[in-house]
Image (tube, rainbow, N blue to C red; front, top):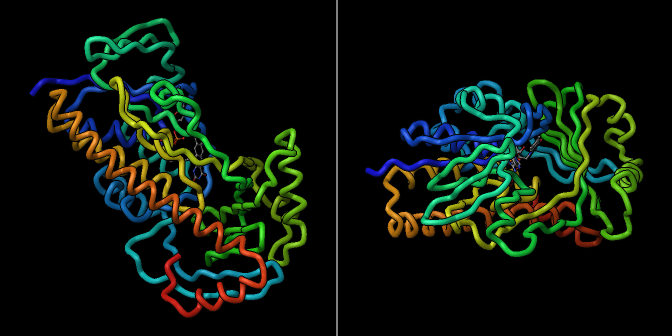
Amino acid sequence: MKQIKILIAGAGISGLAAAISLSGKGIPFRIIEQKKEWEKRGYAMAVQGEGIDAAASLGIIRDIRTTGVKRTLKKIETYNGKLVTSRVPEQQGENYTVTRNFLHTVLARKVSNVEFGLSIKEASYTGGKQHVMFSNGTEDTFDLIIGADGINSPLRDSINTGSSIRYAGIGVWNLMIKDYFPDSIEIWDKNTLIAFYPLKEGTSVSLFSRLPGTYFSSMEERKNYILARFKGYRQKAVTSLLQNAEPDIFFGSVRNVQAPVWFDNGIILIGDAAHGVSPLSGMGANLAMADAVGLAEILSSGFSSDATHNNLMRFINKRKAAAEKAFKTGNRRKKRAFLQAPFTLFRNHRINSRPWRY
Ligand SMILES: Cc1cc2nc3c(=O)[nH]c(=O)nc-3n(C[C@H](O)[C@H](O)[C@H](O)COP(=O)(O)OP(=O)(O)OC[C@H]3O[C@@H](n4cnc5c(N)ncnc54)[C@H](O)[C@@H]3O)c2cc1C
């Protein structure tokens, strides 16, 4: 079989998963990361669904099972402290909550050749190869570049016209607090959602709020808007949450990416570069790992151009369907939590009269 040479751009969750999977198949690769060192930030992240199989294939399932917190009782309350539901979700296979930091660390332990502080300065596709000039002035040639460069992916922009990023109209504050909440709790209000995710090291809190779009001129204004939105919560006033929080509090606007083209000119996109899903779907890291594992499987069966092209297109169609499902889950969860009275009565009745999934 013809030996192929691959460049993985980005050493986040999908890039590291791709590196581990390619190593397992004996396929040579280089992996670059634009940051000079790992960014240690990270809050709650679910490992579930196809992410469980991917984690098993990547050899990290034991770490996940040991350190992850299984979802047990889930409570949903309203802004005023009224219980909407308190149930153990129906068993839907294994499901763990870990920090992003943890997941990244266990993957990174298995990859020793990350080249830090390096990115692609220029890439040109000729004769079926990608000729790459790196940010440090060196050059190399590859059969394939795996674009694992996250939600702002420059590689995505190089094979798609225009930006594929859409703002979901929601802002999110993520923070870690030391208090331990044994159960998963969500507090729902018409334009806000607070989610408490128990972890071994404390509790990860995410505060989601609908952002009225255009009239914020700065990030600071958005932050202040969210703080004001959450001020009166009964469960734990946001101000006291903030007082107890670890210093690294993250604020961002939720963005969705659905890149039309995932494979062109010797570049294939995986993870958030191809499909940035809402954190409310709980699927971002799972899709990313499953993309990487599936891609390595395809590449291990050869790289003759026609067959590879057809196989990759089939793979992409399958992955697009998985991402679509996650988009729908994220939207459904947002709509359900943000619903306004009087529809909430109907919603609460439905939640309590049907099998509870999430
Ligand atoms: C620091 C950080 C913290 C996060 N925290 C959370 C969290 O708490 N909860 C959650 O659900 N999700 C979090 N995410 C997002 C989550 O990791 C992703 O949604 C998901 O795991 C998909 O992984 P990915 O590999 O596609 O993207 P990412 O994990 O974002 O990785 C992309 C990587 O590519 C690198 N990169 C970007 N551009 C280039 C370039 N031009 N050249 C080389 N490298 C490049 C980035 O530095 C990054 O390391 C976080 C992401 C990051 C980067």
